[in-house]
Length: 252
Image 1 (cartoon, helix red, strand yellow):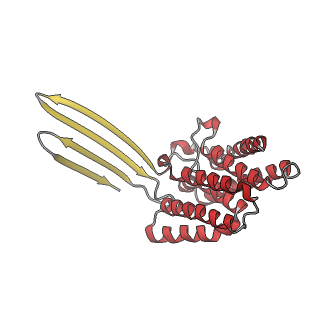
Image 2 (cartoon, rainbow, N blue to C red; image 1 turned 120 degrees about the horizontal axis):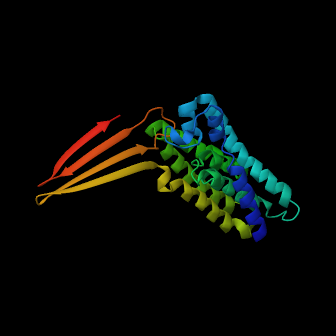
Image 3 (cartoon, one colour; image 1 turned 60 degrees about the horizontal axis):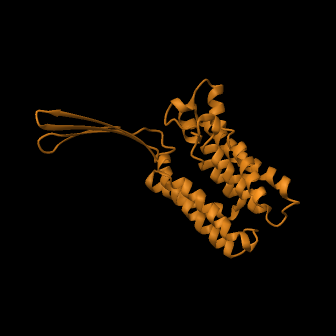
């Protein structure tokens, strides 16, 4: 079974490295890594290449998860008939890893939101309505897609545990704990800090005749407004000289 897990993750990783947004951008002579947020996923594709490109990227990212899961099912359905569902889960996780950390792009890919949605649909379609409902409600209220995504994924983990205990996952009981842990890993990948914000900090210190002058420049580009069609650019300059002097410049 360990061999099956490794092979499943590997198959998923290879499928995940097919970045439809990046390939579409190349077709249009646009390198998504150098425009917008620098992300090659659905959001940045839609922002810079249009709605059609965004939809095609979304479909491609979801379908590659299905493809990985189907390949694993075809390979292991006879060898591991009772636990092939678990191997399909590993294939989906491998696909997310391949999407987020593609080797040929120096391990800098997308965020895996669409891929996680594909994994959810393929592994536990019962959880889709609730997670999708939470996502839509949060985005409608807060206007932050990332917040909706995070809460939707947290609800996913809760649902997986509930459905597993109810026997609705088609997974043998001895593998349920493993399934919970794997989905916890997926949720943790969503919550990792680098996907929410891009922050650059420059610090310049100068000493003048006993006076300590500190200049801190912070540029923050939040990804919290994933599908919102506007940019936020915040630049704050803090100067400390013989006391506290604060100058803040906000530009939207």
